[in-house]
Length: 553
Image (tube, rainbow, N blue to C red; front, side, top):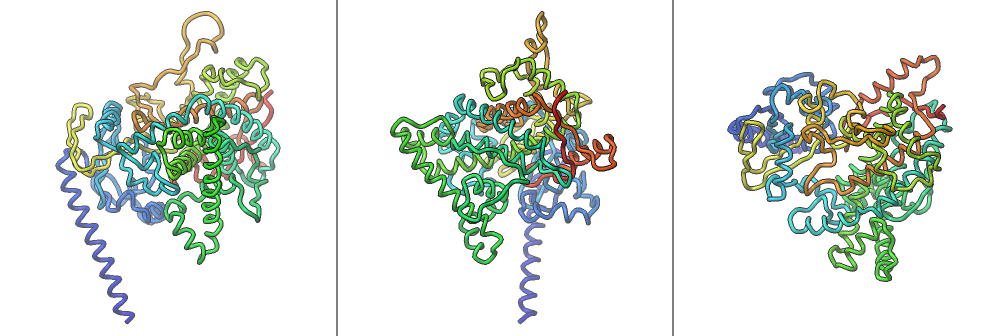
């Protein structure tokens, strides 16, 4: 009996490997006809098991050559960050990875990338929404649809992100930023840093206020306590976002079933159930307010209006989009803050440069009373975010693709035909660092590259302005139809937090007992460079370097 079972398992494994090998050969033969450099990757880039185990396996496999590159160089999630523009500098603006699943074409050419984005409107190079089907946790949403349904959702969501919402984001970000810097100035970080956890709480609090009209005071990771009773809205959402991979991979129903056998999953399952109940209750509450024309200007009420007044969205679609707002806007912003704080701690001159602008514009105005109308003047402060996202964008790339029809594409002087069912990857990490667009200092974090000054008299701060990137080689929020609707939301939030935190404070790596300032900076730099892909690009061990906040002299 045992031998039969073992033989069956061996046969199944053999058949899977044979099928993968055949698919790889078939895809390679297709790839060769395109006329671009081909790199063979014998494991599919989107294989979920490989995505979770790749880094561990590759420690045992050093530089096994395949095609024009090496297995260890290109096969793991996040290789684009480590490689930056190097593969494209070596092999050209277009490189094809052939795998057992699909062929993946990586692009690093600004003109071709904008052509791809433009042609999505015509039904070419569309977003492969099947890759994101797991985001339908609470209902269909903007990220998982194409065609007429996507246009309907886009119309509603675009209207939700308006200046009324940005005003809410501005005021709450100022308030949260003041509370965060007060906490970090006094918290004991002698044992470990809570940077990653605290930036997640910061962005969660801002999102809760802008999305649902809920207001919370900031609490740091060392003060965080989960009550033994029913989870609060904030705690439920925080648990979901902290366990996003698990929630997306299993889904609510499977998660609830498995929690009966694995008690460790019970808290996550309860959080999903509780959050869904909160969203249902808030939908009903906002529906009543919308009917009475008393709804306020947060994201939830805007979507409810689209459901109640215009009959454009169902309740499930409202909840699906609200979850995606939180999912997409929370971790990306939290990681951006974590990168920014570490970068500023390593660059005190940039802190001074930014604080000089903040001091000049505020003119003694209390931070809590700074009006949103001043936002456009903080060009240096915004440049800090622009430069952080250029080098440390939590999203490594933008994925497009062909479906049943081939499509022609021009890359520089080369014309190719992209076969059906091919992924097209807009390689942001390469595009936003390539010397062709950014010069020889493209790998240097230098916010001042975004600033120019108009000629004339008067203060320099009144003449400075943000310049556009060279050759439009900068699309961290994407562009075109599928551009991020929360782009200004994120920018307003980041600028307001920087104002609140760096107006009167500065930050530096905290020195350990007996450690020199240079050694502390070296440790902080190593922490920053220890960055990789989990669900998004993030520092893998930010707890290794605590930051010290002090009053500005």
